[in-house]
Each structure stands twice: as C-alpha cells, then as structure tokens.
Length: 147
Length: 75
Image (cartoon, rainbow over all chains, first blue to last red; front, side, top):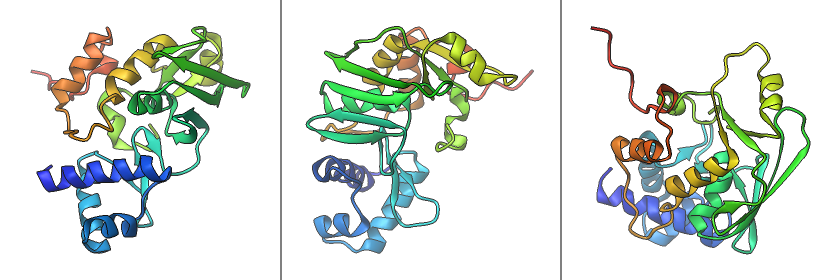
C-alpha cells in the first residue's frame, strides 16, 4: 500500500464520518480532483489489501471497517447519529473509532431477543452477554462478508 | 461474529456445528478499542500482521483460533 493509496483510504474514511454514509466514487473524485475511474482503481487496490471492502457487483463501498455502508443487524448510536456496523465486534469498534460513548442495538443470534448495550468510557454496561466467532482468525478474509 | 444472551444460547444456535471461539462482551469491547481505535486517525497507516497478532495476544487471545498466520507446514 503506497502513500497515495493510504491518503485515498484516509480520505474515504474521513468522508464516511463527515457525510454519515459511505462516500461515492464521485464524492471522492470531486474532493481529489481526480476521475471516478481513478478512484475506483485505488479502491480496488485498497480492497485487495483489506483496507476497505467493495460491493461485488457495483462500484460502491460495502465496508469501511468497522462501519458498514449497508444496513445490518448491528446499529450504533454514537457521536450524535446512528451508524451500521458489520458485526458485533465492529459495533463496539464504531465507538472505538469515533472515540465516543454509544449505544449498540442488536439481537441475540439464537433467540432473537433485542440486545441493547451502552458503552461508557470504553466499558459495556451489560457484562452478561457473550460473543461467538465461528471463523478462525486465519480465515477471516477468505470471505469477509460471511465472517 | 454475533452477540448472544449466554453460552447456552450459543450452544443452541450452533446445533451440530463445530464451535468457534467465545469471549465475554467485556473482552470484546477491549478488543474492539484496541483493534479499531486508530481507524480515523488522520495519519493512519496499515498495521502488520505481527502488530495485529500482538493486539490479540495482549488480550490473552493466544490459542490457535486467534492465530492470524497459516499454520506451519508439517515437517
């Protein structure tokens, strides 16, 4: 990952937070004075380097981890707005990335009962919950959407 | 990567499937802050696999499930 791609990655993340949604190719092209095709080429390199995740069939972002560009079962209220996270780990990661307290709304994957966790000073207010990861770490990026 | 009410719920959800790894939500929160805390830093740069592994190890996630490197080939 060269310095230009790192700069593109950092701009993409910054715009995600400033806009409150995933930036488009045109958003980034307008901000950099480049073309959407140039941005797409850079995003593809960043996808290959696991620095972000692209949609498989459109020229759009899927993930700027921990943020999700699409609605998910993990919603987080932090820094005065709602975000979608990619999974339970990422839900706490949204608070971490924003350096903010927050509220996570999800549900038990088994019974479907709603789960609400407040994060204050980097601590969850309900420590009775547990987290389960099925995919071993070495295979996380084999299929990051499934993971 | 899901949240559950308890380990009993995990067992029921897994059914006959092999389990992965279970950690407390407190550990998950610690992991998230160590892993994602720098993602919006203006001068963010990618971490190496070794640096990522050090984060996992530092939280006591040291068994094979949390190993980011492919296993060494059998001699």
